[in-house]
Amino acid sequence: MSIEDLRTELDEEDNIDPIEDNQEVESQGDPEETQDESNQSDDKTSEDEEFVITVGDEEPEPSDEDDFSGKPAPAWVKDLRKKEREARKRIKELEAQVQQAKPAVKPIEVGPKPKLADFDYDEDQFESAVEQWHERKRQVEQQQAAKQAEEEKAKQAWQNKMQSYEERRQNVASKVRDFEEVEEAAKDKLTATQQGILIHAAENPELILYHLGKNPKKAQELSEITDPIQFAFAAAKLDSQMKIQTRKPSTQPERKPSGSAGLSGVVDQKLAQLEAKAAKTGDRTELIRYKKSLQK
Image 1 (cartoon, rainbow, N blue to C red):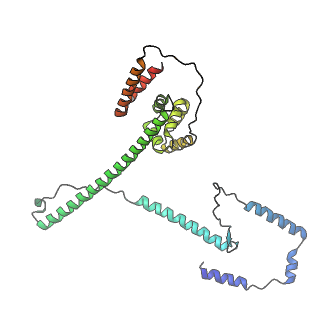
Image 2: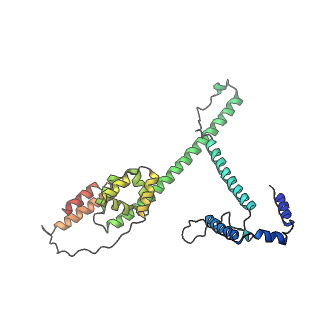
Image 3: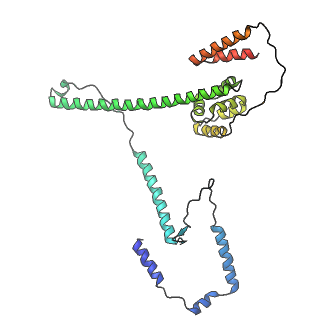
């Protein structure tokens, strides 16, 4: 139905003869029937109510029942809105089908460089083939350069994440004595992919790993989530609860060092050497083993 047809229909409704007085009296009917109709109207209003779920103070989106020019939307407006939604849905479906129907991009094959003998010494065909060969070669080099740039970009992003994580873990390790040992215990439970998700996406990856190292049961539950998306959601839920609290140390009698007075200096020197070696090589195994020996 076009807009002109709608206007004509509305004009015809405006020209309908008014209802006579006696028709109005007849339409009033029995008071009990009127009451029943009122109750039915109330029931219908209750059924028409709907709940809208929103977040915070945001306003709900308008529905088909919202006002139209200051009045309840007429049926034809609702119908137009419905058709518009269906049209948008259909467009999305067609776009998805077009994307799926697109053929996969085949890699360009440069092939061997043409030789004049390949064309029975026809110089025109030979020169044309050489030009096409150079063009294919240029396109392949361009694709390889773009791919390499993407890989470098991803590599740099990962290095930035790792650097940020290392700084954060060093900060926590300076406040928590057993951080490194507990962190290693957590890493033993998780796969490399799961660790990468935490470091790349979590706000507090160092706190999550420490928490998992302190709670082997929780670490086991999380490690059993093999789907990366589900793992990320579970980690995000855990991430939102992470925080560092200050705990007052319990009062203990002062411990007197045993052995010679020079032992402390020797220990500190060896510890510093191992820390420097770990920072250079990235292998902290020897450092962790030495720290454990000091705690015995």
